Length: 321
Image 1 (cartoon, rainbow, N blue to C red):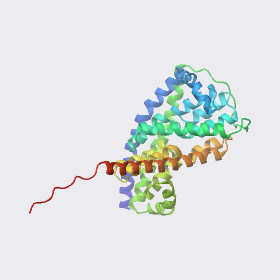
Image 2: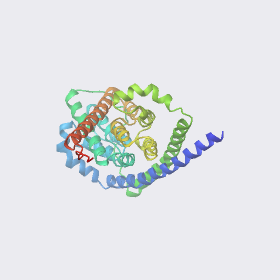
Image 3: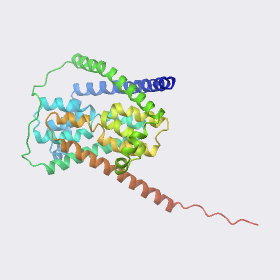
């Protein structure tokens, strides 16, 4: 009983510390993005970027959805589906792309603290998101159609104080959820490690992790981040990384994988619930994430091998007897 109590106390302390860091980072970032959106800066960026995004099957309103989701979250994208003229084909392209490329600022900060390069994570997620959009724009027929299950309504005019009030209320609702989830995950993590139960996850997931190019020890973290996402599950990766439970090389590869697939369960269901086909939401992300990890592993191996050839060990002088 004493052992369990110690585990829960340690997990709660670590969870509270990490949760406060996440909130300290998240609150000013989301406030800043909210003000940029209210000021029309995001809409201006969308208009400026339209010539480039035409190659990805997006209209001006589609570009607005993509940029908004990239800076905020997927709920913003779905909300815009209900207020803008987005047809089913474009909604499918946007859903597949924004599942990879969303909430970039917050989630990149989290991944950087968990051992990843911030610049690489941004380039990887934006690049793969646009790649998916480009491929779907080629693959999907021009008459690809279906039914979006959203209630269409006009954009409501909001004052600055109205926008700030909505933001404040959402953060008040979100704060206890973040705190509770991160503390619970840290306690679960400590419990599994203390009582040697983590192997129960590692053993069945081992073949899958090897297929993905990841270390078998990444099983628990992979499961957490593909169910809860980077904003919440990433806090557990940060704790593991900072405590040395996962080495830097494994952390970088896992970050590469989950940058593309994170919240594979919840986010996929989110868009499926509004009528988007699950195949386009699931398969491209999974395939690209596996490819990205194996390409990174190949690149590292080639660089390391080349560096060894170019920098051979110095020849030792003959010993004198």
